Image 1 (spheres, rainbow, N blue to C red):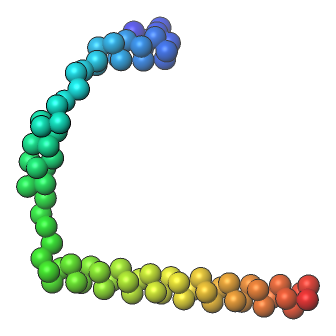
Image 2 (image 1 turned 90 degrees about the vertical axis):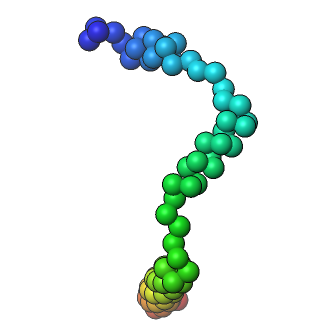
Length: 80
């Protein structure tokens, strides 16, 4: 209903959705079933993705290092 407050609506939802815990065996089976659905990358794709990630990280580190040096040089010139 539109006249219910959030607290009342939330309390009703939690009362309706009380579920039993799953057993560890059922959880394990569900995890295995989900892992079977995953499309795992090939070795070539994995090497490509890793290389691209490392190159990107190196570029970002170089940019941050350059900016840090530039700002520190400016601060030293102004206040040093």
